[in-house]
Length: 628
Image (cartoon, rainbow, N blue to C red):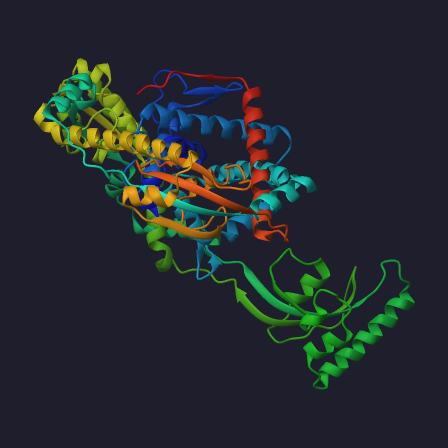
């Protein structure tokens, strides 16, 4: 599938994909350790700043996602840093606008809803059950505190409420649905003749290659490249150097034991005989007497579930034998909960009165409520304590490293020796692409800065995701250079062949189309070209045997009126097709429910996108020039 995407998404379609792919917002750990000077924000939205660090992270993740979409390599025509970075910034701006709008309009999620949402996430579960220790460990690994993560989740849920409100209330008019059904059910009878690229013999002369090389010399440049030396200080390295005493871990265990205790759940059933809240004492005594009679039947061997189905007046549980499922503290009214949590598994309570009436409660099963042992959580506690200590140390370490790198700006060795770090060297990379440490846009940006590239100084601290801080300096430099003709001769020859072949196909196809319009037949042209016609019965808009873009063209052709209609279609890969349309069949049968649903969903999403654009247009947005 990814190969198909790479083959087909070119031109405006590819740019549309870039527009539609949302920018993933990554979690990051080490917060801004260096405060020296106020950096110019990437943009401000109604006075709220979007930092260049946020943009760098969004851009890096966006490039990675685009690389995956295109099967490992972004097409050259789309791999333009300023284009991708601007798209990432646009998405950040829109997210900020939506977040502000949702907050001002009172969209929010309550504490109970937030708790349920977090507990429902599979990433925080073990064996299908939420585990608070896993929750805390996952957040720490991504550099989040509980409060910080929950705040981010609240913001996300608020904007999702806004989106849900718009999408859920969107609608399409009946006449629009009728027209959509009419058009989507339409079928057309076509025949297609295709002349592939390279059908003719194409010879490229040396002169043509040399002329193209001279005229397009700028296309055949080796980009400016550098190698860098660099130091990496990471939170993981700092953690590895910290030793924790057993007593400290035991103290932490005792202080946080509640975090390793799972909530107790009780699976229960009940039989309810309802009673009005304003009922008299006599009426209450009468209902209590009837439920005591049911209790007596149970004591004599009657089946609780069967009696619940027969007598219980709770519409939600009676048909299920009175089953209420799992109950945790706080879920039921107090008298019911007090009675339930005083029972042992298998016990049945005496009659219990609540605002709903009189109950008999059966405790079916107890689960949870256990506390993990110290040995079971020791590794987790050690990681937690080390992380806290490392986070408290790393600020000073980065500050000291920064001072050393600045004071002895002609080498990274003094800083490396003082902090026992290794000076590493990258491979060659250019301004737009690199591997290893140079895969990071922030590293490339600083490496090609005037301080590092021109003046030969150490860089300032560069904060990266995954709790890393990097310092770089220039190792080697290669200026941009012209590739020789011999290096690019094959590439130029292939380009010219494709160009000539495409032009030849278009000219041949256009002439054939004129012949068809003048009375020639598709069969005669097929015999002349030496290729077979693809015959078909009536096809729909999504028939798999034809190129989707070709079908789109076929369904825009005028209806034939007593004859045949012809159209030419140049493919993006250089092929050229002639389309013969002989009949159009309109089907007024019942609409495809899935198609109508997709149409409605698409319309609703377009409405939501319109809201985003309108809010963004109304916002006061100031963008800083993008630094590449």
